[in-house]
Length: 226
Image (cartoon, rainbow, N blue to C red; front, top):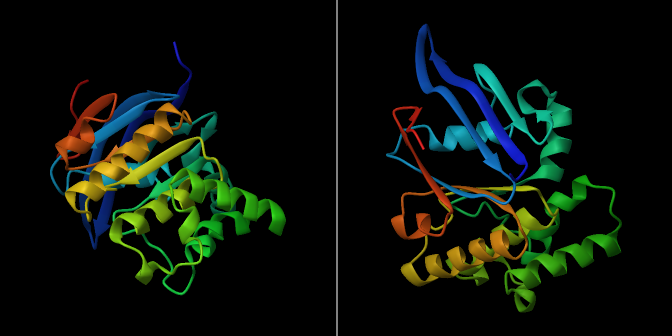
């Protein structure tokens, strides 16, 4: 059996609005082995993005344990979380979240500025990441000089430049046309199969979900049985 990379035990999450508690996730239990490509589907408001944020340590559960590797994410301090996230997690967003005043190279380099790599080492890793996503010839371009599909490729290069164990993708094709979405999913498949990256992807797109090994559904904060 493959090693477990992500394990959630009794994860419950709610938010408070004044004195009103708003539950978002209810007692989520599941495991993801290394090398898995998991698609999370479900209606808007079902808690999919919240679940990704909890796994990434961007948010904390109200109850329960979240283990990524051997680390209990919910117990890390904010400074420890930032260092851990920079090593372990690559996050891909629907709207790219690129800095418009930075070139593609500079956007991809950003996560490496939190590491101890020197300039030459950073350059090598950035060039490798941009090469993997097919944008070696766009390093000096700014986001407004790129197509939507190219911007998402830059965002993926930024997510993989630190060689993370786990890629979390929140609607990575949600803002793209059909062909660009297909190209991005081809790249995601390659990252999983060729580079053995574990991927958890939130998507509404059944075509994207077909690329995953496993599809799980969230509805009203509850994870449907596998």
